[in-house]
Length: 108
Length: 124
Image 1: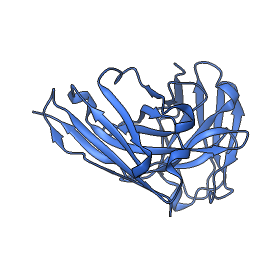
Image 2: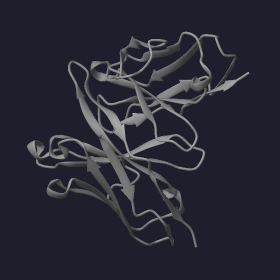
Image 3: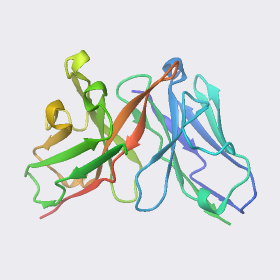
């Protein structure tokens, strides 16, 4: 099973600042099949990034994904008020599919 | 509009059984792999399992934590996905989401559509 470790657990930032979230895999993610999701309280997750670096439909370009192999990053270039949420990474390259523990981006 | 809607969550006693449903609309259900994902209160997301599409014989896969207790099935004629949960324990308390695997060229199949979730509470 591929274990995903997200860091930090919580990121305290102000609107307008840059957010950098990390997702590290215990082994190489096949074909870099790594996704990022945003989740707000009481809501279902929303797909932001797939294939490590491709934005899903309707996702603003301030969100970007990068990385390969075992190290992946989600960057939010300038935080908007609606971006404060929990972010999950997930690998879908090998069964069982696995998620990281999540990173909470909170208002400082 | 592409939608998934789960139902069936409720309070159930330890050792009991429960069947969840997920109704799909707005897309060709039979073309897609469909998954269940759960989230315990205050915790992260956990993949429960998937049912592949008809072209892949509706093959099912499960997380180790539920294998042998949970059964995923689908009815393509009714655009529905099901999760039969048996021998429930308090560790199964969670919001259960169904999710569609959408195909992305050169990037495989990612969870592109999610339902709103249904709450399952296992408690005496």
